[in-house]
Length: 245
Image (cartoon, rainbow, N blue to C red; front, side, top):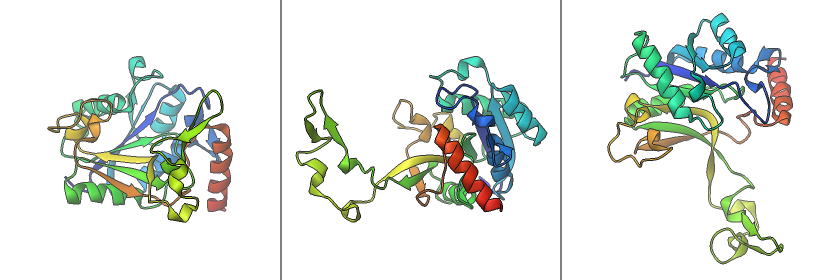
């Protein structure tokens, strides 16, 4: 695989109950999806950018930006549709158009993530290609939402540890918690073989497309904004306006 020949698949499903129309919502004077398209275009690792969507507005932004257009079937745009199914469909369409080949690294982006740290694409793709692993996903520190500090609260208000026998693992300073990380939605990079579930011994299920040899890159806390609630729009708008000022 060539690190400078990655194909970026931007997933932009129209439906969203939390923030309707979030993929095309205006953030710092640009549609949300446009920030991801521009981010991918700025990377030396990406040679092809495609947008998969059932949203005419999102496809319009993609077309104006010169991206490959993938009209996503409605069966792949439901609330229960999986992102790997949509990504496989997009790759199959691009392959049939002879726009990509099976040796290229595949980079999956969510269109509702307008803010990512600089250099992330190159970092993730380089890790994928240099290690010959199956996939690379980005993570951030969980901070105060550490699993050791989670609890169960029953209908009577009784509190019990989520795991183990001692509440909070008997740790009360965040600095004493072991490092823990959570996927932040900024990037997934993987091989064709992994995406199409062709890696031997990969555990069947919704995460099979990550393969067996899974790697991670760690982003700084707060460096990714994923639009899941209305206040995320305000945060992203303020951050991007401050950056461009």
